[in-house]
Amino acid sequence: MYLHGTSKINALGHLEIGGCDTVELKKEYGTPLYIVDEHLIRQRAREYMDAFKASGLTFQVAYASKAFSVKAMCTLVEQEGLSLDVVSDGELYTAMQAGFPAERIHFHGNNKTPDEIEMALDAKIGCFVVDNFTEIHLLQAMAAEKNQTVKILLRITPGVEAHTHEYISTGQTDSKFGFDIGNGSAFEAIELASKQSHLQLLGVHSHIGSQIFEVEGFQMAVERVAGFAREVKEKLGLTFQVVNLGGGFGIRYVEGDTPLEVSQYVKAITDGVKNHFAGIGEELPEIWVEPGRSLVGEAGTTLYTVGTSKDIPGVRKYVAVDGGMSDNPRPALYESQYEAMLANRANEPAAETVSIAGKACESGDMLIWDLALPKVETGDLLAVACTGAYNYSMASNYNRIRRPAVVFVQDGQSDLVVRRESHEDIVRNDLIPARMNKQTVTS
Ligand SMILES: *Cc1c(COP(=O)(O)O)cnc(C)c1O
Image: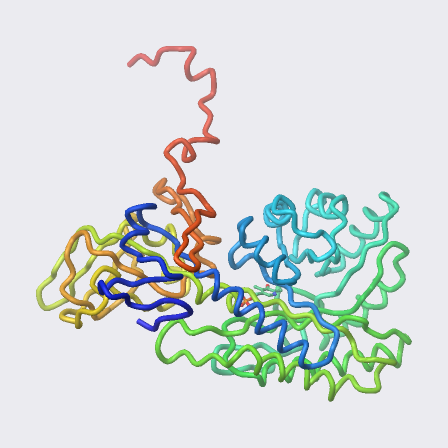
């Protein structure tokens, strides 16, 4: 297993993260446990900020909080000077409860409800990323009612779709998100939005995909957006103050994943902006990006306790852990791959190949296929790396399994940032209708 950030194997042969021995963390907090390397997140955040500062452009780096949205994370992001993207009232509420500055919050999503818009207007957030014509009209009406002027970006689809190792140039008309440049709806949206009395159009947003390992997709997107900006300037006399190029910067889950350095992605974007936006307006636009996975993914490790196993001779050996798809649905959803090690016997050589099963009642609840490990025993600790993004945030109570605790570790200190759910939490919102208690059920 690749050791990210401050992860290392200590003198006892145990996996240690942020100076904390994982065997001790299990004793203190139990398993499954999400362990987050705080130092690594801060380091990544600084890499983004430094790379943009070096470019000389005006910028904002907004953390896409859907990757991992908890109050302590919002606080960390605030301290590092980043902005924050939210896509629901729940993420907005989390940020507000953490005291995140409203003017640095951006609200995304293809179907913001009137209640969510009202909450965001009352909070006076910095910007709405408007996705469709219905929302232009709804936001204008609601802002007018409150006598507010609202800053907006329009989400456009530039006709570039990035995949991990390839990028596809598509019409991309068939997407639930945003206004298409190719079919003219983006232009129409700009024209409409710019005429609204209570909307202040700052510019446009584009997000081309996730877990991207190349700069070409971003370069193509910048070029297309610049071409669009030029058209808008020529036909409507409008210039974009802000251009948001989204997230999607890749991370290393397993051997064979080849992400670039943060600075390489940022340089490709800022160089592209300098090349393609020169001369469109008086000055270059402010550039925003929205990393999610790349800020937190590699910083997370999930610690499990090994329970049962089932050896099918000549076929495979299943080893089951005390979590699974309820804390990490990604393998079941996307066939995502992960690396893992025995955290309590981290120095021992591999002796067998096993497949790691979760405990939920689904055959598809498998975390890792064909993993080489020392001879696994009940009670061993299994550490799965790179679970910081889209794990806790996608966790569920399927089978009424309680969601794990989350600890931040740094410099030998561990701090609980999310408590493990209790049995009481599991039934907290359940109600038994009174009428069911009135009559005794007779057979
Ligand atoms: C999901 C998303 C992001 C973050 O994507 P990552 O792959 O986690 O970096 C950024 N912007 C938008 C609009 C998104 O939907």
